[in-house]
Length: 161
Image (cartoon, rainbow, N blue to C red):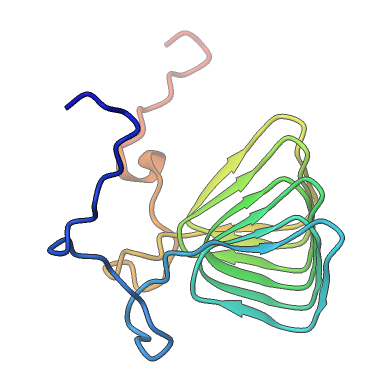
């Protein structure tokens, strides 16, 4: 009963999810990697998350999260659901949800995102365009800020009256 060396047989009734190449509607569980020392020239397209520690010279289209490690370098546009950047990017970055720029990030491009987190020490040179991609009520317009929604207090006269 307490024998740790005992081998357990797999229950034949257990369900396992298997994704095939023909099943385009299911999300792949694997995380792709571009390792340090690897260089990709051309368009990188994946339907699952990817970690880039090497370099990509071209566009990266990720249906998931892209992680660019501190040793990673992308020279081209990045399109992803979410992005976490610690390396260098030269091109445009488009994320549907959240973009995180880590302390070691060097981003020389325009970014388009719904949510942005920038750690101290990160370098960002470019324009930032933020909007609520999930809100259909605003028809693609930038979401209103709290100061635009709340009525402003009337300024007091400076002459003491």
